[in-house]
Length: 351
Image 1 (spheres, one colour):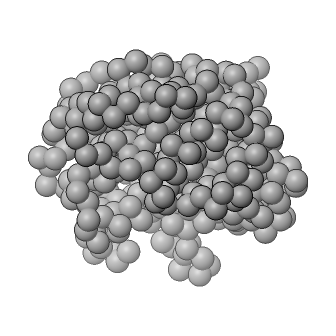
Image 2 (cartoon, rainbow, N blue to C red):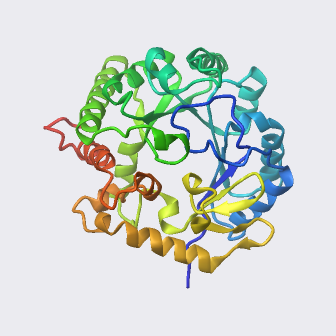
């Protein structure tokens, strides 16, 4: 039962968040603060094989546990561990001190933003119902004045799918955005209450966003990369032994909650069917193999698709959250549009 090594370790530093986003799939995660000791045990599990792995600091809002972030960073550096550090944050708690720390320690920064203020405020709110855009932009401005580049992640729902060009507009307006990631609605947590975007709307919205980004790149001589297009380019080079979309699809991911419990995917935390073990006892390899096999068998329709090689397969957690037993058609539209742009087959436009 040979298994691949852990290539993606996600630490939920806390389930707490100062936002109450409409679609948050992590809204039911454990709200305790992860201790540095728990984090170090998880890191040791991923680093045991000596190969490079991505270490993503997540939550909740991970900056609520900044003290743990500093200890994690010191541990990785002191041990000279082959970890690529990333943080996904709502941006509102960024200060000059935090910005300078993240930059000094080469921690890649992703901030969540779903479009122009009017759209973003409908989806990303404070617990009292107020919009969060001003707080997010304040944090991004702090990064900018410290000359720090970042990426933004846009969650796409039925609310903002027809206005995805605004995400590109905001990215160029902000000036320090270098990458945009599109994350379609997941049906876990609060996301179960929202309506997923229709496939035809996803296709139209993504095409408009890609087209505007291309025009802005030519006009300003400043490219902003889309994660989906870049992923297709990676898959074009070959070496995709199975699902190339996500490490969890191949049993190469581990999500650790604040108490040290390990799950196969961040969207499936708390679901015992996807439990892998605990940082104190390690990952149960039989459970890991069983879950990987279950995921791959469930997504059989992906492997039969003509676009599988360049798509890498759909997201199991996103599909699982719909309760359907067929493809998540919105994701298929996103992937096929991205393939067309990456391969230059989008009506003759060269990408």
